[in-house]
Length: 259
Image (cartoon, rainbow, N blue to C red):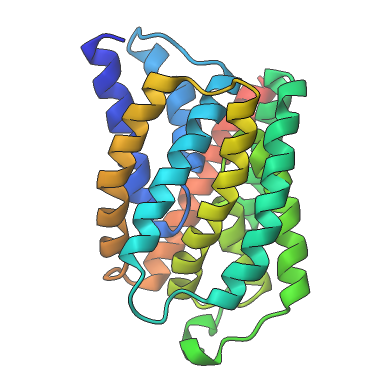
């Protein structure tokens, strides 16, 4: 790895982790396409879809630790929600991560494109009144939450994402969880998910060591900074940012799949 390659990987990790901490996502929705497309753009070595998914899985593990730490105080972390969805997504993500070795690169990109498209559609569904609910009065269907998290886990484990880009719209639209609680709790759930995805990728030899280390360092610096910024930004603006981000990624992935 030359210095240009190291700086590029670090910046991808930093930008993605800052946004992930701010929006309550693991960051793979951003870093997957960035790792896939940016290095070749600068004439640097390119990664395969398997390598990108492996690096993403490891990086998300560390990015979410930093984000959860920044949200540890206050009533933003819903422990019941984290328990039900976290355990379910952990099991699902390990299954997806382990099984992904049997899939082609086109298959991995297709799964990613489908997940991103579903998430993009859900983010544009109206979410009126959810931020008027007091945080100590939040209620949700526990078994529906666990079932949806399990399905998300399998798909996200395949692409090396922790699935928060799909979990967040599910929590906002289906479970009716307030935005700031969704962001904080999804980081904790994503951390549990990333354990399964990372274990699956490492045991099947899909992780590039040195790029992963650079992404980890960037994550530990940037994710807490993003989480602190997210606490101060208007919740509606956070929702719009996430929706646009997911939609742009979905369009790019599907253009590559179809054309």
